[in-house]
Amino acid sequence: MRITKQSWWILGVTVVLTALFLGYYGWGYRYLKLKETEPPTTATTTTTAPVYSQAQFEKTMKKYKAFDAFARLTSVADIESGKSSLGGYTDFPIMPGTNATQSISVQDGSLEMCTTMTPQGVVVAGQYLITSAYDHDGFHNSVLYVQDLKTRRYIKTVVLKVTPHVGGVAYDPRNQLVWVCSQRNRQSELVSIKLSDIEKYDLNKTKKPIAYHQRALLGSITRASFVTYDAGKLYVGSYRTGNIQHYQLSKNGRLTGTNSIKVGTNIFETITNALLKQDVLTQVQGMAFYKNYIILSQSFGPGRSRLWVFDNRNRSVYRESDALARFYAPSHLEQISTSGGTLWANFESSARAYRGTSHDHIDRLVHLNLESFKAIVDAELQQKGAATK
Image (cartoon, rainbow, N blue to C red; front, side, top):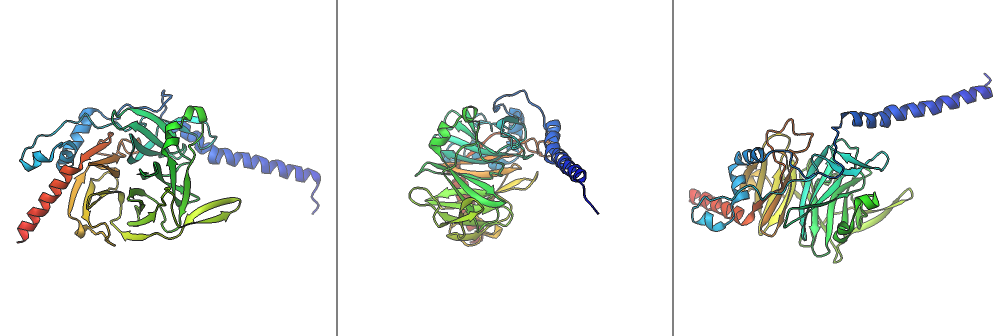
């Protein structure tokens, strides 16, 4: 069969039209569908207004008596003297951006407003309170929100590269580096950002994601769900497998034990081995240290969350039966982190994706008094000890 020039021309046109068709009805159509279904907003910058009313927030907190007490007790002396005086609910900062966030479009790199950001991580970094969020629909880059720790004032939104889940953020105070759980080429990754670069970053001027200080693929963990810093180490956990791995930081704050590998024209830093591996509960969203205690946050869906308290951070396995105490918390609890005598907790129940199914309404960043927390745990342990004698 003879193929003429006209046949080749027709074939070429068909291929081009097919590619255009698939582009539109593949990614293009998906993007247009987003534009039709993502709730519109008149906001042009990241919003700071609450999603829920003050009454809704307080009603949710009061459903969880122990958690509510930790959040409002201001003095250990009140516990020791048997007083039940509690503070109010006005000191909890509002989680920014859940109504609308200024980010970058994955499709064309332009600045756009996103109304489907989902809160994840929380950490204190110097004088700042930093939280993370990802676009539930996956069409805008993930972000960090920066607030003044003292005044609770929203300062800026920092856009990250592409769309990782950003389930955890941590802070290395010695080197003033913010660490973020990320993902690249479907592999778990840790990235660090200089706090000074966060302070200088201006999205409306650069119109680009912030630059990273270090990026390292984690060859020994399938997904980095949360990260915690403690004493020169990063503790990285996996939500699904219930596994925590330790990674050493050098004096200048870089992950040690990395190897460079070349994939195509790109060179990646990869860590293949962890210092230590520990098995913990599954569905853990965050891990925090306080004195000789380890606190784990555990949640899944609209059911009530849990805070588990363990001793001995060098255990190889953390089971429910090993816990010193367990406390219930509102649903959709995500990362927890400690700063001095305060435990911070972030919730995703204010995200648009979960507002219709969550029975709990938390759109504030909840902080708990760890001195009162420790006192109550110690009191419970004493009661258990007395009961067994």
